[in-house]
Image (cartoon, rainbow, N blue to C red; front, side, top):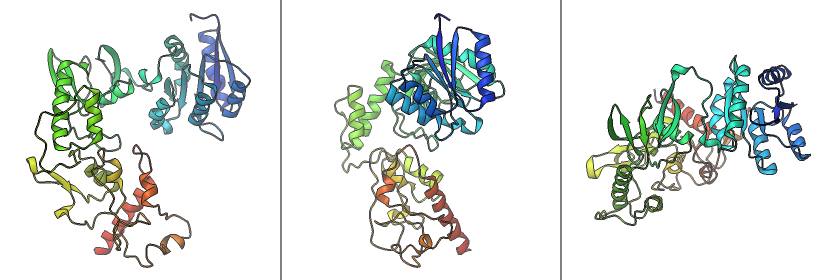
Length: 403
């Protein structure tokens, strides 16, 4: 260690884990002074008293409040900007992306050997100092054979087999523009706006980063002249198709493109054929109410024969995920899936939508109804699981009834 003394705050409610972590760190370096508390409230009290720490090690599972909530409070109220290590159990492994957003330097999954690895992670975090968390390697422990090492814009990065270039780039804070990509649905690779230059086996080509799997030794560049030229061409074509979409104008402005040289479409619309609405309807809702039709210049997205679909549940996910606001919710005053007052499952309206007898009389309170207005206010990065399952259940029941 370069410092004479290092103060570390350990927030761990399990006394056995806390004892093991303290022992491992003390045996590794006696200059590290560890102060242990068993709850988030105690950690906040210490900071309130003016205590200062070089590093915080915090477990996610804390009594009364989870670790991310405590960390958010520490960041906002006490302006703590030093590295933080978050300890996640196996069942919470999926929280690492959320932890990164809250300023965690490293997520350590609690495998059998995690206490032995903690001292090395502590040393690494202290050495890195105040490097922004999203620019760090946030991979939990994995066997060496599952890791992939390569370069992005000259930076040595580490990915995992099965990840794409876009996955790794975003984890390192490297911006790559996208239109047809969303983390909640399968990748499509349709808009091609995320193209990057990949050098592999002494051959350099342009590839869409959202579907290109990482491999050892590749060299990736995201902002070369060739890449920017390709993106400008793609944006020009999209702007000719959808000249009134503000998102496209903003993306064009970022790369210095003021207008398109191509002739504007005779009947412009806002749909860029990204397919996000088609995939979310099929994969998240299970309805498959909309899809692609026709080919070439006449290709479009819509319901069969562009009529009201019996499969549509009126959930509004297609409108919520659309990046260009090409899809809007139309309120129809009839007993179908789209209704102003409720997000309705497929139902014959035994007591009317307004009465909602199924909801009011449910003995366990399992059924819930949410207004379309409230539903569309939800964050685009997340979906209402409870509603989604309810919609799927209604479709399954309808299929059984038809049989």
